[in-house]
Length: 426
Image (cartoon, rainbow, N blue to C red; front, side):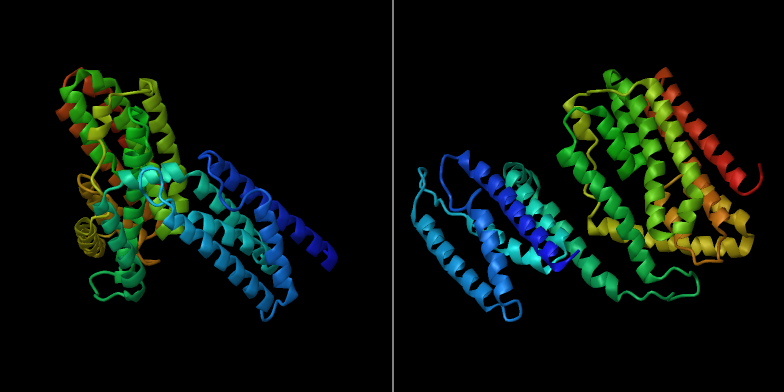
């Protein structure tokens, strides 16, 4: 593209983004019946002014800086006038959104000129979305507890400060897993679980039964099975939802395992993808045969919301379990070979399989063949399905437990068959 055509395209992009931003700004503030500086005419002009002043001296930016100071001085005057003006309820009628939006409109022009164009587009769209979602964001902020914000802050500190300084070399001959890999595994599991937790608590519609199983499977299919089975055991009206939800949660578990493994070991994820996706599809079909419940009582949904998975004590416990299982896997593999790893997979399936699955995914190349690692993951998942089937039978009781328990046993059988096929036994 010639320089003239490039400038022509930049001019129209600046004008379009300013108009788009101003349209959203004016529409938002017109609902309150009060005028604010800025809008569908002002923002395009501010964007064009910023672009022209930037081009006037692109090296020293003197004209652009003077324009920004003038705009800032005027907005400061406006802001203080709003601070002194009391609202009808005696509260200050001031807010930083109006000055910030005006300054942002002024910066659109230079952002387009500097490039790449997607930066200016992304910033403008993001500003419009934040402006339009004001009420929903305020409602969300009021719903989130302070303890959760503090916990998430601690997690971010440990992620940004601790993880980069952890050594990425083994610190003991008992395992090839490094401290960096241990913490990376913790972050992988906690991130998936935390996203599911937030969606389940703050986004999922009240009374949507399939949300319980879907998000519960991303969090922990075992915990979801226990919660739904207990509910069905005490409330016969929840039986149908529990039967469907238990199987659906296990179907989602396969997708969750695949996603976590893909973050740590792409080769293993590629080897497992066909089997895990097929098992997830089979589980979904088995759940659909029972019928996806459209609504359940709000108390049923509330009892399935798990505790915050970002509690640091839980993360540290997971890290310890991960190291212990990694050491055990290395010892078993050294003493009994691959068959010993399969046996350990069957045993750990009757507890939390995440540490074992992640220890397999984090194994150094050559320590455990990819096919053997894939088979071990399938065996652990199948063993865990048998555990969930036992939970279902013991908690639901009666004929109501037969359908979900049989579905879980069938998934376990398919998983073991897939493991046998990968290892060449079938």
